[in-house]
Length: 76
Image 1 (cartoon, rainbow, N blue to C red):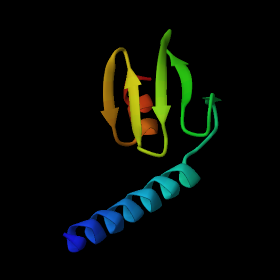
Image 2: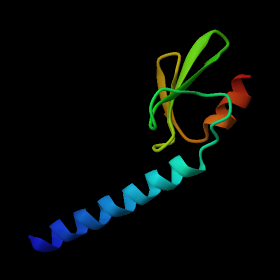
Image 3: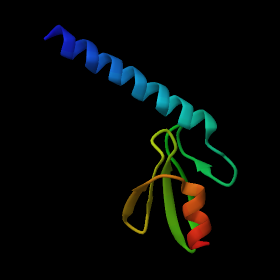
């Protein structure tokens, strides 16, 4: 059982590093920064919520993951 615990801790560390990297590399231009982890902006009269550490965003009630700037270009 210790092996599973060690694997879980290692996976958590990897995920935390990925989130940290995502947050450090996120472009802050044009965003209202509510907290370190939650940003937003208005696109076509609707709020776009963005969680940069997870590359997760919500627009018009739909939650997505990926490149938020590419998404903004497509709906632009």
